[in-house]
Each structure stands twice: as C-alpha cells, then as structure tokens.
Length: 265
Length: 289
Image 1: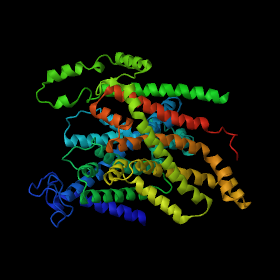
Image 2: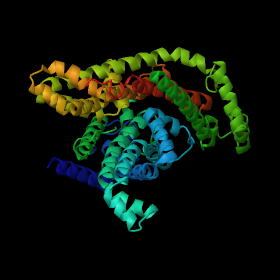
Image 3: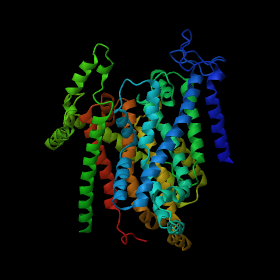
Image 4: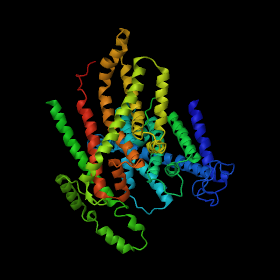
C-alpha cells in the first residue's frame, strides 16, 4: 500500500513537473524585472528570486530535470555495472581480480571527491544544457562501482546453477548465454541497484550544485535552488519548498527499495 | 608470522593501488578536454594562438611519462611537487591544512559512531520498537538531505558546523551496523544463549559482537571515506581551510599536480583504513563462537 502511495506521489509530481510551463504560463529564465525578491502571492506562490524569476516554476523545472535525468543516469550506470560486474563474475580469473581491484579503488575514494575531481576535467565555457548533461553523465560514469560489486556476486552465484548447466548442454554459450539466461535472472538485483542509484544521483547533483560545480544558471536544479540559501539568509520559501520536495522524493525512492535493502546513498 | 605475511601483502597492494590511482588521475586530467583551461580562456583579449601558447607553457603539457617521472621524483623528495595555483610546495599546503580536516573527521567519526551505537545497542539488548522507529526515521531523514545543504543550513543559522560531520556519518554507519548486528544476533547460538537465560549485555558482548567484528571493522574503515566526503562539503560551505577545501579549489583551478597528489593521498588514507580493518579482523577459528 505504502509503495503504491510512493509511486502515486512520484507520478503526480512528475506530471506537474512536465506541465510546469503550461501550469504557470511562463519560462523558468524569464525575469520580472519590476518584482525581484517578491513575497509569496497568488501570482507567485513561492515568490520570486533576487533576479525576479518565478521560484515555483523554477522548482518544478528543477524537479523535472531531477526526475528525468537521475533515472536516465541510473539506467546507464546499472548497464555499465552489468557489463563490468557481469563479465568479471562470468569470466572469473585475472579479469575478475582486476575488476575487483578497480571496484575497491572506486569505492574507497570518497564519492564527492571523485565527482569534483572528475568535474574539473571538463572545460569552463560550456553551455548550461551541456553542463546539465555533463553532470548527470559523470554521475552515470562514476556510479557503476557499487552496483557492479553486487551484480558480480549475483553472477558468481548463478554461474554454477543447474539451469545454466542445462543451457550450456543445449549449446547456448558466450554472449547469448549472458543475455538470454544470466541477465533475466538478475532482474531483481538490477532493479534494486537502479532504484538505489536514483536518490544517490539526485543527492549528488544537489551537493555538486551547492558547491558550484553542478548545473549552470539559468537552468534550475535542486542544487542551484538550495544555493540561494548562501546569499539570502532571510526566510526563503523557495529553499524550504525545495528541501521539503527533495525529502519527499528521496523518502519515496527509499520506500520503493526492496525490503531489507541498504541504500548506498 | 601469518600476520606479518598478510601485512606485507597488504602493504604491497596498497602501494600498487596508490600508484595506479595517481597515474590514472594524471592521465585522465592530462587527456581531458578541460586540461589547461582556466579563467584566461574566457578572456576575449586572448586569441586562440595565445591560449595554445599558454597551454604549451604548462609544465604538465609535455611528455606525459616525463611528467609522471618528475612528479614521482617530487613525491620522493618530500615536497610532493609544486601547486600551480598557489605556486608553493604541496607538502607545505597539506601541513597547514591537515589538522582542520583531521579534527573534522575525528568529530564526524566519533560522533557518528556514538550516535549509531546509541541507537543500535539498546534495540539489541531489549525489544524497543519506539527507539528503533526513531532511529530509522532520523537516519532516513538525514540520508535524504545533501550533506552540503545540511552544512549550509547549520552554518546560516549559526549552529555547530562540526555537528554536520556527525550527522553525515551517523545514518550511513547506523544502516550497516544495524543490519550486521541484527544478522549476528539471529544466529542459532545466540538464540540458544538467550534460551539459557544469559543476560542480554553478556550475549551482546561475548556472542554477537565477536561474530560481527569483521564487518564492523570493515565498516570503521569505510567510515573514514564517508567522513572525508562530508569534510569536503563542510569545509567548502563553511570556508574552513582544510584538505577538502584544497581539493575543491584544485578542481576549480584545474591544478593537475595538486589534484594528482590529493588523489594519491586520499587513496592511501582510505586504503590504509580499510587495510587496518582487514588486519585487525580475527582469523577463522580465532573468533569466539
């Protein structure tokens, strides 16, 4: 029941975020120059920021970005993890040992340190939309290690199972065996890793945005919106709403995780 | 003898990992599209040839292997190379900044572990549903907030910023500690001990903790990495001049020597912490059942 509620809340929120522009009838970058820092009103339910931009619209667009790109990055990182962890677990030997060492190295480095170091590899003069894609692509490229370890263990468990022996006896080998027999049996593990990665990526984007290394203005993101707190010390309904929404979304994703699963966020 | 053999193996593996980490970082930074890019790139007064000349003048822009050799020599010399941004030996920068990071990490690890233990142990000693629910809710909520946002909130409202470290480490440690100890507490020998009427505290100390010790020690090693991650956010947000802030500034300035050295040192520290956990783990047969 509670899982259905979580799915329902996420679906409603996603729909609102998708329809944000038509609901509010404006653009997230539009500046109401005569109304900078406006208080909450019917016209602007969360007020406007210091540049006169509608906070509610920006929050909804930031939600759309997080709810679209974090799952996309999670799909990519889970696929990468399936490839790396799957090959290591299936082939074993030297490849397995090298992969294990690489996974240990990736996991031992602090996630945020890895992200800021990797973000520094990219040019300064990128457009806001490029910075958005770069941020989530980086998350996908660096987030494979924890899922790969779980997938590798799962593959090693399945490697000597009876159904695989039978499949081999029927002549199914190599890539076909991997795709047709192993991968479908890892579905629950892959789904759990996918669902664990989404909140981790949302949080990481917010952390990067707060450190000034995330999505570039004028594109809104949860990190950007929370960054307002640094310059505006008064009560800020935009920041409060952003934090509340983030808490709700993260809580929903945690509820969707399988029973007993420990999140790696 | 076996301990020495294991320690030697771990030492060699540590050195190899650190060197691989350093070379990989250097190669990635050197080949990345952002290499040699700084604020001068955005200066309209400089044309493409001026920018190319500036990039070519960087000491790291020559032969990559020569750069690695020079950097290794600097590491062995002890000054760890020279930072391009600060124009100073990196060893001096680290010497100035490490006490702040060490203090933050110590507060984070001690506070986080103390909170986690305070929430997990009572639940194991006697059934305490309300306590467990409180722990699960608070750790769940803290996991949902970015550590940088938590630091910013506490900083803005003039709270104790060092508490952020404990609040960032606690939920991650709590989740794993709770799972590991609950799994150990459900073993048949623990149930037998309970059935014989042995007091809960004695069961926890003599029957549950020794079984869970390897995972708990591994978790202690991992928490060093968690604490460093939180320290980066806290130092940047609260303007504390520690190693985390140095890493952030190195990343912003694309300071290759500093970034490579910091990656190697962070790899060394986290791998040392993990290896210490492995070394202290009792061998099979030494664990008291």
